[in-house]
Length: 313
Image (cartoon, rainbow, N blue to C red):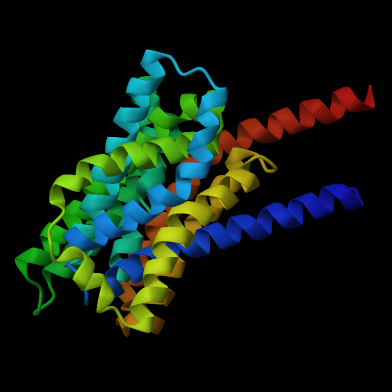
């Protein structure tokens, strides 16, 4: 590896780690803000601000020709991302600890792998079957352990169900937005889908929203900044930068750190208890995600070897 290639690798690794750090702390920031804000006020404030931050990026659409089919896809992606994922996961985190929420959100790559195969009408590779089985086993273990807790309430299971549903909606968004990202660029596609998905939230607006934000403390404002600027805007831009410099199969491995960041963040900032069962469940889920990525990694290695042989010739 040349010095230039090493520098590119290190910079890509650094920005991907920073993006994962922002995303992993998002459930922690959500949970922290829900102490002072209702889920309704939180999602409206977060995405109104994020949409305004994306306006300069979306202005670039004037230089692009969007056809009707792509605009309809962007609307569907915006609804899946904002209403389907972010709104649902915010309401779910009202009843679920941030660490547990981070573990359940980490199942998103499993749903992406499964839905991709279904859409492409391809049979599941045996490694994907094993990975999905491990991932589901981790979720079942986490849910089963929760059921045995003496302090568990019905709302906890409702919250877990909402977070899992949100993870599935994120998988749908991820698959559906790919053609737009390839055609128009990831920043513009992310910006337009965020703005479009935020528009329906206006119906949830109420007169007390502004006053609820004026009463936030310094810690609340930092958490809100992490969600709006860090998680929604900066992390997405950093991720898009990193994946253009590393193969997607390698970049995807960084997502396995999400539950680790959420568990540590929940313990440090929210005082959440880290149980042995929670750690075991997260390890099983992450193992499942890694196993489902084996075919992509193997394909990348074969392509890398083939390219190296051609260069030598």
